Image (cartoon, rainbow, N blue to C red; front, top):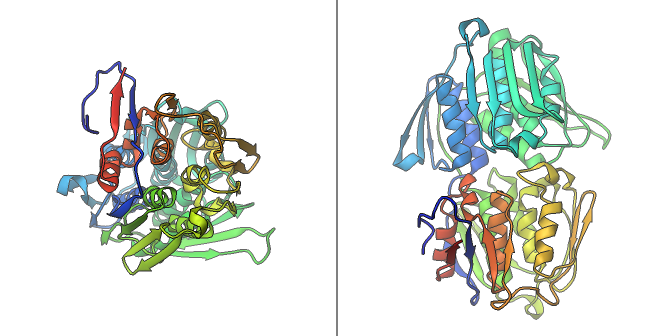
Length: 466
């Protein structure tokens, strides 16, 4: 059975990656989710028509395009959705023009709900943003709190703990200075930054954003700033001179129409680089270099610390684990705040190291699609691993006596988290009997992941339905 086989609607599907020898080959992952949704938003509110090539086709990008179309943005697709032609929406929408407003379904897409919450509050109008039950447990209160003092109208997150659904009823922003906490999600700041040109359009004045406290995932904010400038806006990141100072972001100008090619997804690339590390293989990811916009390319630096050899060109990065010292990966102590989406990937790699790996700086991972510390630790323990949870991360001890085999299989729960499923697939490269539940959840960001992994490793997975 392949990854496109249809299963009964009441079936609990699993997939088992078949162990084998070293993984060798090359691959080009699909377009970056982070860049696709950022580019969609800026093109949607830009002047004229933009063409985005290499876009990701996934659940997260679908809910973004669907929501933008519902509010009147024209989006045409070509090349099976990998090319998007977007005609920007310039006019502000008054709540008085909308008797019922727009009800937007955003599934479990954090980028969509956070980016649209900020942008639509600046555009003006009446909107409700709702999603799956897990989305209604994911905090967005700090973003709403940042917007409430500046909007001309009201904005509210109505679930307990300041979670979606989000109700927006505004005439845009009435002020151009605001502040936001930086320690929960960089997407809050990115959302405010991308909304700022819509507010400047109305007032003619620049927008200034103060980030209070530590900023998590700094590379994603720099990615946002770079993308905004490609689209014509002016962005100045004024970093503090001391550890206790605040980042100030100053934004001016509007979005232009452009043609833009979107990079392959660096977070997705981490699974293929990790496959080389775990198996003692050699994998090249095409379309990315260390000069890429996405910070997650730095995952290869983590693998280098563990003993892998890294080679790069202007358009590729190769991870070679075929000549590891002593044939073994070494455990490391690493702060992954800047590349937190790759923590799950590293956690599986760390199972096959010779010493413990300590991951730091990722307390915010508990508020992702699932608790990516507690739930991750729970599932890794099913494999026989010793895992210590910490306030800011975890320690992964190497597997000594795996609790899984062909005769004693283990089912791993993915919690409907695409990164859980893709990370757990890597364990199957070395351990027989690893059954991953709900593998289709990878459709959130990488619908063809299982087929691409099969092609790279040169053998089929084992699929079941119960």
